[in-house]
Image (cartoon, rainbow, N blue to C red; front, side, top):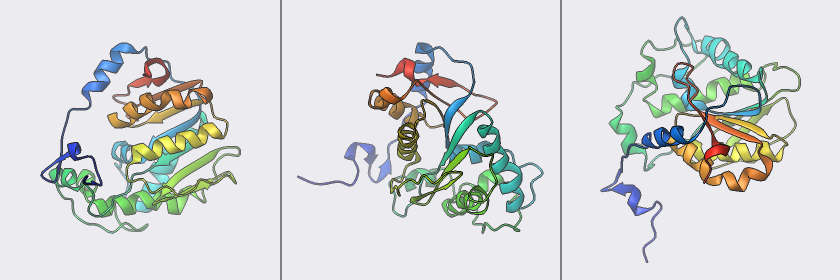
Length: 246
């Protein structure tokens, strides 16, 4: 029997199969009642989605971006939660997802350093995997570890395969998953094991929603409320996952 690193059904002739997964959200939206926003014990954020959605208008350097855009966003999340987890995927060489990234086009490589200017074409900058790796690590390395977050508040953020934290002595073990959707579940489970019972997951990835619904019964003993939805303030849609679990 042949062994494959990935299920053969996921790809055809070396290219990842495409589907319209967002159709699932329309079906689920019909089966759930949106809950009012409120406070949560933990907010788990899809870091890449946050970076794509946060505005960079008026930002000059990457230092400005970290201190004036990214960290203030984390602070706003902490206003209505005790813990915030920022989760990034990992960009690995020879990944099966490389063909999908190629279809989106290649951006211009730019080094990410504090005093360097933020590129004018932000979406084009984010198309380059190396740019994203450096950008995702920059605010974590420079600000999230040392920033004086309010007392009693905790921030966890992935950094490569590791996890850095602020405001707590609790540590999380390394995680070598490539996809952010898997790591989001790992962070959610850690938060539940640490005593959190109301949880919000912010993502634009339908995969994450499906995984949370499928795994809900494994986590249900610790969850009072689990909500997932888009981080966009313009098109924010929330799915009370505890209402539509399988």
